[in-house]
Image (cartoon, rainbow, N blue to C red; front, side):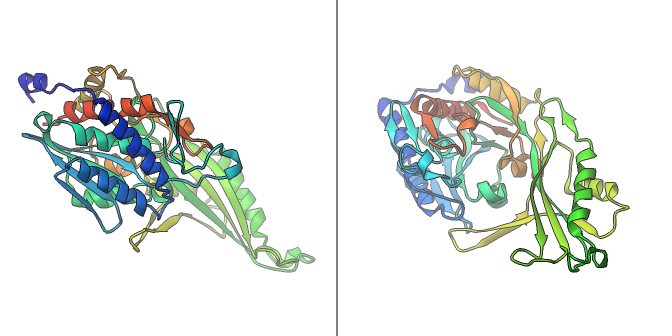
Length: 399
């Protein structure tokens, strides 16, 4: 991109009508309740909005991901902006002041499950791409609403990236409109201890798998965790212990005990390296195994997605042209171009971690609102998200 082209790409603020449309669009998205596997209404709402904004092409794939494509008048790179459509459940309804799926607009805030995570990002990125003047766009822009992220992150976006070739990806997650250039990974590690059943009055006739699991826990807790300047320290946190036989069986020594851990990963850690670490630490302990959980979801289109619950950590070079271009773009519209890395996991594990694509995480609102009762996003922050996505769409060019 030469300097004369850059000067012509001036970002115009949203009109009052476009601002109102953005708010109303997010309200409709929130009202379209979309727990994982039930994103159909949200997908239809996003599709209708893209078509109303005259995207060149709008379609859904076999998983139910929604993809909108918009071409610029000038040649350039292909950029994808993505946010997931599914949400977690509302939890205890008594903790909500209003209906969790009301989309209520009150005192400058839009309330409801998903308003922050991540329908606020989805609404703002679709409006951002759809309202950009075509003569300001270089290359092709894609807006994507993906399925299944809350339970099996990455699988929806992976399907899209198999079909759509792009030069870079912006993941829509609540970062307070700050620029995230990396993330921790995540894995669900399952340790299974094997024993031998016997009557509890004669435990010497059996082998108690619970006691063996306790030894596994002791050893795992002593293992050091990696650290990274940007991402901090890794996490290995036990979540659940279960044994067999299950109640109401009584007076039986457990013959199996499983311990589930949530492991937060650092760049460079792989599935093979993680499993090798634990196998080495427990090599002298007989009768156990370690695996990574395989998780499955049924999509609203009727297909089943299954994948290992292992998601790679990644970190962009802070001095790269990609990151510097994003900082410049955001700074040009008054958004502080501060960079950081998020401690949570996103679909970026596929875009950056698996496919090696230049990737950023950016979106309106605060991650502390995600999954919380009375979730909301302020209208001001929502509109700031539109401005940020537009700036990135115009300012990022990898050629």
